[in-house]
Image (cartoon, rainbow, N blue to C red; front, side):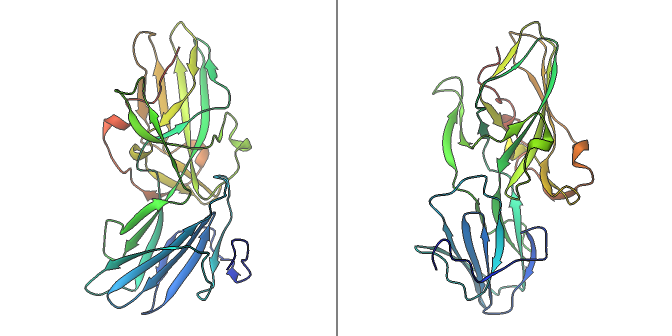
Length: 273
């Protein structure tokens, strides 16, 4: 099968690519999620995973399809095998947020004058997690899109390894397209200092955020982040809201935060002024 040949695609009735799937013995299911071709095969005592990611793709690719069981994935594909005493019928494919911070770099630096309030909507790429019936931890967990590493910190001694992503941020939510492989995070800035804030790169603490889904809007969301800057010579105070974003309307809980460690939210900005 070529990368563009998708004649055997079965367009699903479901609005979402994730959820519960049932497998008979020696049965497989296959998907294309954006650039990721993916097949899951159940045998009596193990699960086989086959996948291939297109080399040339954009992170903003938003289409997905269920594929016919006989569809051949593009080559070369990778295989992974997970062994069990006996495989179960049910399997859950679930979206997750990244396992590291995700660095957003606006095309132009953002300025927030002294005494002003502002909200920025950004989106970060999702991971694909596979969970076997009656198991809590996923047997696999990898990004839908190929991610790039980047260092985030004031210098090479102090900082952390993160992921870099294409910018998809706006002050107007209506301008942001709905993408089934990205989650939206509202970041509220409160500049109560006497100087203008300048934001060049933002490290979104993805591992510290829960993942939510709004069926009415079709968007995946995280909780809100509030950034309070009161004094120039002190770092901002950052708070992750426990309530769901009001603009998301009614949401369902998809995944908890990967980590409750404060280290992920202590270093969101390289420079503020």
